[in-house]
Length: 589
Image 1 (tube, one colour):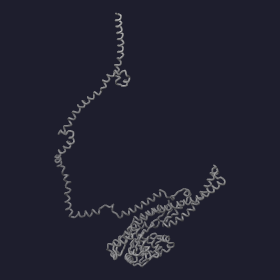
Image 2 (image 1 turned 120 degrees about the horizontal axis):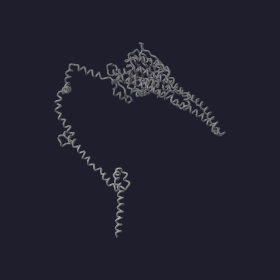
Image 3 (image 1 turned 30 degrees about the horizontal axis):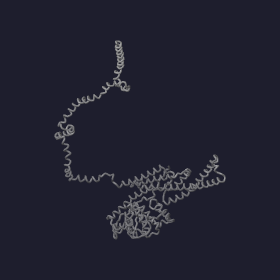
Image 4 (image 1 turned 180 degrees about the vertical axis):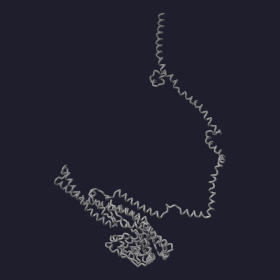
């Protein structure tokens, strides 16, 4: 990345505001960073700068009608006699003792003054009229202390205008560049196209609260003048009677002087607004115009190439009808060869059409740059996109416009906003402690009356020392309310033993009876072990094999089962005995 040298204009501005206005000094540095950003994108040349979009002088514009009220005011304000002129005049402080009139070209070529390059705008409005700028504009230098650190623009009566369009352009430009606008209300006494354009310009600028209406209070009141201008759409502004301007001690004169003194502060806000607008215009205007040009360029180039491709396709159709071209396309050798031949023809053709269309786009961008009054070179950035890859690929964004450059632009915008906040800090005191309010309150306390006031609130703080002295007496006082705390445990133990007055005795009987009762209660569930007699009744069920599954009854039933064979043997022994006795009886018979 090549570093851009700072322009002479920015160097002069930094040295000019280094002593008294650090906000504008830092603004000049941010302007240089913006110039470096645009220089990297090939939008600016090394000697150009974006800081020339607005004048860095505090500017006061004066617009009046046909009466001599405005002329008398200017002579009183500047302290010199002024000749009658029908040109728009810019007054600047000069070292010469006499007035010096310079041509309008001095304003047109000097970026330090307003109306820089105004001839280009006039020439766009009317072809060839920019060369006659000296018939509409002039610069006059005066040795007047009222012009110290500011410029004054005198706009004559619209009745003497010879070119309505040029006068309207210069008037609108003056109002947009001004920090304070003094309007003598006699200008609204006439009706013309210029007056209507002037009213429309004031309506667009009245929200900035920089308009002061001066009227003849001998013939009209403030309320009547406000009503008259409100019907025209002018509802914001200060109203000052012209008769009060002769009295430097009047409230209206002080108000006007304060408004003129604030022109320097309004100038600072105007420059910061121009800085922020220049940063935003990079994406909203410059990059937008380049993207639109690239889109049109690619559309035209593609359309031209499609025409040639369509012609080739038409020839292919006739060849198919005459000699069967489709068979050659299907052929594994001839088909790829034909496709490569068509590609070899179309790629150079597309590049050729892209270069031809680019020339028309560059001419259109140069015209568009003059229409928008841009310092940036739109055609230079567009020419960087004329590469083979960008011709063949559908890339819409300009070269160099990516996430990194967007982040850099956002950083510059944050710096511009920080400058506005730092300028606001010069006029507010929300971070300052309220010490000035406390100091006057402390001074009357130091007076001899203060000791009389101080003992009165002293009794209010007596309870605090009393609390400190109470501790020695506290044990006696605390001993009295001690019995009061007895009901607290009574309330807790009262629900279970409400009839007994002495809850302290209750825990002793509770502990003694509980142990003996526990074994009695445990002895009662002993009969639950009834399965022991059930084991005695198990013998008749012995012949069934199923009870063997139970472990406990098996052990109990085993003994009786062992005696069964003994019983069977006894039966067998008894039977022969009975038989022998019977035989003996038979034998006896």
